[in-house]
Image (cartoon, rainbow, N blue to C red; front, side, top):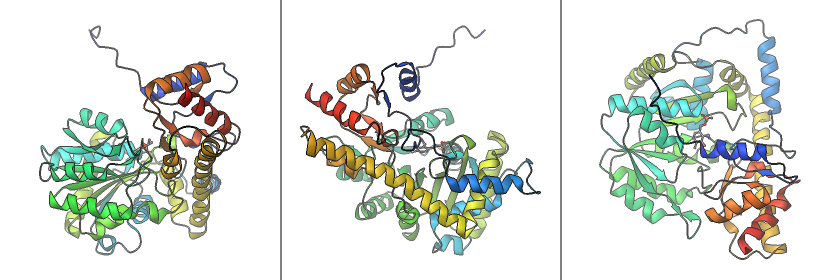
Length: 401
Ligand code: PMP
């Protein structure tokens, strides 16, 4: 009956992870997967998460009951506050609809389902390039996608002119997806001045704005700074959907912890939108996983633990920045590698678009066991004191060959 089912193409990232595992090279480096690693190359359970988890499971009231369709309220409310900030007018006026989701991916899927129902036939504009799951989820949800220019390969920075031009040419009232910070895969973010122009362009086409924020606090180490764009758009009067992931900033990857926060026009609308999101959740997954949300809620609602969390965020973002600086210094000061490498330092977050060609990336994997994606994207979190020099020397080798 199912003989004709075709084999799907393998996942590019997980395919490279497999190659890495199979490699017997003594200096092999895994720069493919987007998960934080400590300076020994190991997964890192945030100390504050460990503490909150212990507190949680030792509490006599801890249980494994269903959370309900809208999720765990102390978590959901704290998530909205985290992204919109304590000065948010929408929060003060009760104009926020929000539910828990199956991490960031689930929030994106849920938002698409909502748009499909209530913004019928509106296409969604995605940056080029973007996280491959953005278009993939749209295909499965049956939503049409368009693209806007984002990355300029020549400058290895933002193609602001192209982006604005494409936004201004978008079908009126389309939906636009924006990475709030630490753009994946390029590591290139607009500056506040550029965000203002982007907001202006979105207004000119009356676009529905959908932020994906998967790296709040992880990108710069500053929770407010990483949410600047979202808060600016709120101040400009936009109604917004915001998909929030707690995978990176809490290190809760497998616990599938997320939220969808929406700024809407009135308190009445917020109540209806929340109820509809609950209804859609019921049909998709019924209920979200509880453990990660309860851990995050403990931290987000306790000022002392919150401060500790901010400290843990600094540890992660600083280590990544140190690795960027070291790669830059070895390339430019010691090896005098041909080319301009400032982008390695200027890009932000987990990822960097190195600008290497596909042939150079293949050679790096084959001859140096440096496992990066064909696009030249590296996960900077895969670098550490033990392998950063080998990586920089290999990069230098690839550029000169
Ligand atoms: N959006 C972007 C841009 C991401 O990079 C990620 C994580 N790779 C996500 C959303 C969501 O991830 P998760 O479902 O693990 O929260």
